[in-house]
Amino acid sequence: MRGGQRLREESISTLPSLLTAHCPLSSVLCPLSSDPLYLLVMNQTYDSILGLRAIRAFQDRPVSEPDLKALLQAARWTGSSKNVQNWSFVVIDDPEQKEAICAAGDFMTPVRNAPMVICLVENPSGYEFDTGRLAQNIMLAADALGMASCPVTLHREEVAFEILGLPEGYRCRYGVAIGYPSGLSAPSKVGGRKPIGELVHRNRFESAE
Ligand SMILES: Cc1cc2nc3c(=O)[nH]c(=O)nc-3n(C[C@H](O)[C@H](O)[C@H](O)COP(=O)(O)O)c2cc1C
Image 1 (tube, rainbow, N blue to C red):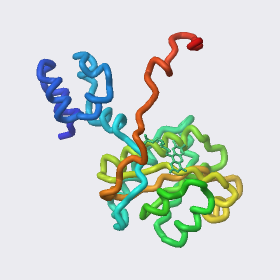
Image 2: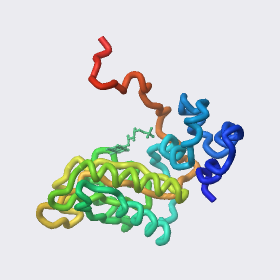
Image 3: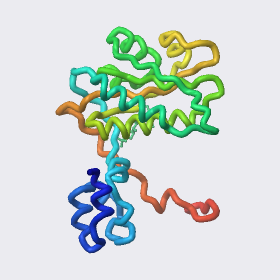
């Protein structure tokens, strides 16, 4: 049973301690987590979203075929504009091809360190927004499966186009490096996010000045 299911079955009075036990990150990172109503909607999915980090160090072992299949399932179930699903995935695990694709991006350490990179191809009429959703789904699925991941940018799309052997009209600007986390798999720096008050506006955008 997932932590979220268990939470929903408990009475509200026991939720705070359950939350700390099953969703340690959300209780630390979310300032509203002491609100009992808010606790009702907390679950492991939410915790995973708050805890997801870009990881750039991996074990040497390859991604298992069942784990890869599960990642690709998560990818293909991503929602897309008008459900067009105008995407393709190029899974690179051949070391030479992996090194070759590194020529397309400026910050490819995650790909060099990872056993695999999934290149997210926009088919003709595909949308970059959909690609972002794909990447996040793959990353969250990787996290759920005990893997780590990092998105990478292929700044030189024309190089990616050649290396991947894409047909005319297809493009690839992003990939996700995937692997099992190693002992060195900490986020590269203390991350954190901007406070909600700095980001959110009600009804109209109000300038801070
Ligand atoms: C669209 C996008 C492109 C990214 N490209 C790269 C990249 O090329 N190389 C890299 O090492 N990290 C890349 N990242 C990872 C970001 O640097 C990382 O998400 C950010 O620093 C926040 O880190 P955190 O999620 O661990 O807090 C990319 C992230 C996004 C969303």
